[in-house]
Image 1 (tube, rainbow, N blue to C red):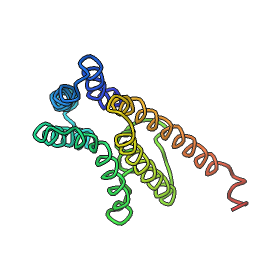
Image 2 (image 1 turned 90 degrees about the horizontal axis):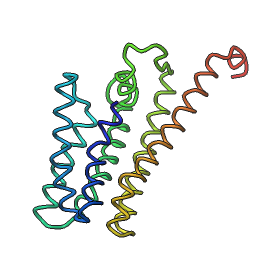
Image 3 (image 1 turned 30 degrees about the horizontal axis):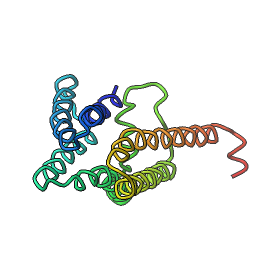
Image 4 (image 1 turned 90 degrees about the vertical axis):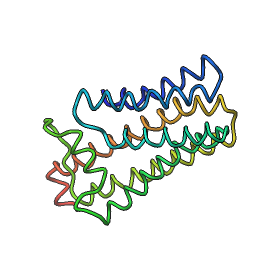
Length: 193
């Protein structure tokens, strides 16, 4: 459900662009939809996902700057700024607090569920660094596509490319988590290590 909530504004942005071929109209559409989705999330759950809130704030700020300066390049930077801010937050969480930001996010998301992820502190740190790598690569890929390819290509990449990159990363992350969890459950791994 959260994934649909996170991607609904992007789907609206993409749809508005495909229908009108007008980046500014699509930006206005996402600037309206993103806060509405955030408010809907609050009304339904009485909670606000921090990542969604940060993304919404960036949509509104970068969208406003883009519209004021009549230059879409500012909006092209929004995903990159989001991903790089995530990478910096992940790095900072290695030094601030008891848990990494990724550990806090995953534990909050799986609160009360059977089979919650249990990793050692070094494994949480490794997973957190994996997120740093993912966020850095996603930010670089976004800005590379924005400056190298046409506007329609960037709009498609924003939806399909970044979503695809996220899904590939989540699969890699899941395989890694399962592999280290199985290793921890394997009694022979204690005697080998």
